[in-house]
Image 1 (cartoon, rainbow, N blue to C red):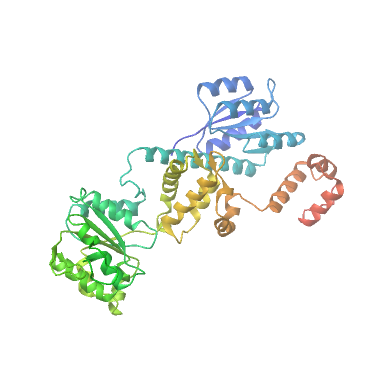
Image 2: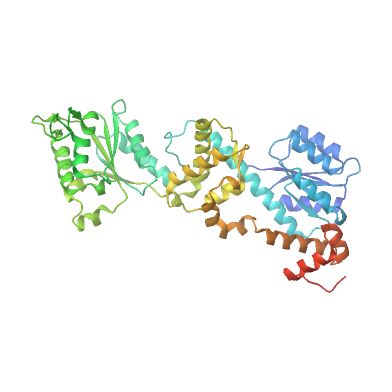
Length: 452
């Protein structure tokens, strides 16, 4: 992981040293400055990724420094350092781009928390950048992507089997990219210049499957007004992908077995066989061995198809690939919708990586498609996520620093009361609320104190 640079801009040496030590323990390269103009000069020479800026400096106002940094440098996390009496100015600074603020005298744990949150944002941003760079380079298998160990093993198996003229069975849940995997095998095989056809065996009658796969002669049945070439024949010399093979009716399984054994087909209503040279890649989300035991799938067909079996993992089994896939889909839908969304916010990426995806990669793709379509700015934020995803993720929001509004209010009032030494008059002045309102809030949140 990249080592980030941090600057502490504070003319109080003890405070600056405390912040610098906390940042160094997190792995930052730290430089300290007592004057704002010296910091800005150094920032121009060698930009920092994180800056702690005191609001009151001998030569400059901290807000002015913040605005200069935010205007002239991209992707900089800024934290404001303030005294008790300047909390309203610190809050104003957050509206102008500061990520957070801390109040002197620091509580060490609070300082560590703020620094760690800034580091996590920088690391997520860096990971997004790294993934985008990786996508700009030639990915290994077009739209079939992954960098996790389990996917690298899948890619290795695909490379091995692609050049061998044998049938392949893909064992995978719906939405994991079965057809993309099949297309990759075809594209890497000697058949790559021939036809690749795909057919889903689920949800169709035996008659329709037979007509689609084998074709029919003119007059073979009512409505057959012309000869039709079936998918198997149209893919002669190439590859046929049969998805949901476990749903194929038993009578059709017999016909498919004959095709594999005899390497020829007979159109429905036809009298002359057509020689056939095809490779079959089948896929299923069923346990075919259980289906065989139940008499729902032919054992002889299973062994004809299961020459090499490749297991495609569910997205929940390779969550480390989610940022890579999300950024890939971001680029895809930018191009499709004519958008220029640049990134996915750290908070959104955190939720995306925690979700379990019952719909697998296809569900992630749909989430990013929706987000890009709705995005108004250059970053996908929380409001672009589907409501159901936010609801499902709600139990995890506390760990992400995303809290209900009441909890934010409770913590802020507690923080202000501590900074004001539990003096309600001072706290009311900082919060900008009447004393009676503060009293009700303290009672509501169990923060009441007899100190005045």
